[in-house]
Length: 120
Image (tube, rainbow, N blue to C red; front, top):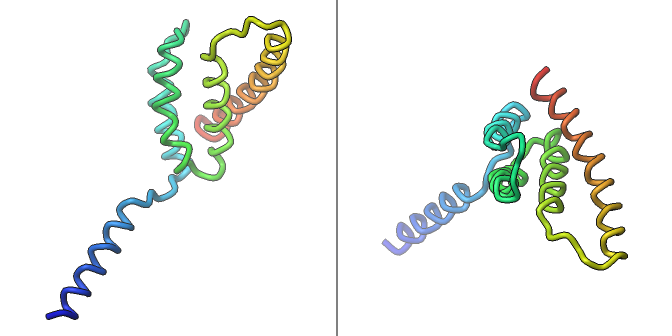
């Protein structure tokens, strides 16, 4: 009886552990999930809408396909920086403008890559 209980507990722990680990998505599945999340973003997105879309995409990042992971990461980094408060300090403004320039370029590249992988 003791051995049976031990085996059942071990099986339960294995089942629980396997249920918690998320499998990596295929590129097509990643595209679908990102597409659904981004579709809710209006063309004149408010700060709140941007936050909602980023929060919808955030869980996808950890399970995204290897090809799509940089795309998802670039989208999130750009969105996160975009919704931050505008700094008042001149140096901080300049730093943020430089960072936004870099993130904007990465975001545009991500959009191009998304188009290649997901649309054609």
